[in-house]
Image 1 (cartoon, rainbow, N blue to C red):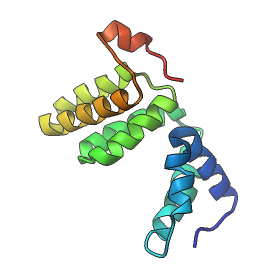
Image 2 (image 1 turned 135 degrees about the vertical axis):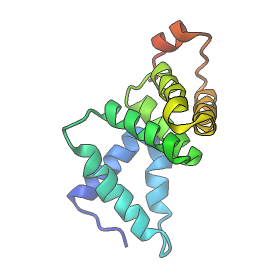
Image 3 (image 1 turned 90 degrees about the horizontal axis):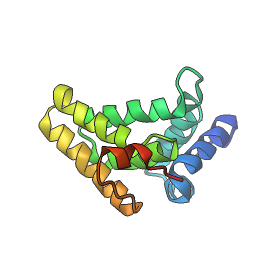
Image 4 (image 1 turned 90 degrees about the vertical axis):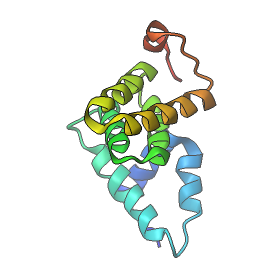
Length: 141
């Protein structure tokens, strides 16, 4: 059972802002006895508490999260958080550069997975980038 309190309210609002209804309401609405503790933790503590802290901006939190997911080799979550990062104002160029930088510290396979995940998200959102100038100027609404 998901506990609805101030942390839940802040968390579900943050999830909606970053991931839209498919990443927030549908996740919570499909909570069952198997995944209720995970959904409760993600909504209340991840997005209702940690993502609300003032020490980093949402864009900075998205950049760090994107980098950590590449490093951890989690392409599914990398795609999810690429979407969230775009919603939080991180540019496609910044996400690309994080993935390229991962070559140095995470290795080529992790960076390739990160680039592929980002490419899929940009394609699904209809964002086309011809060069770095385009990427820097591309705004996502």
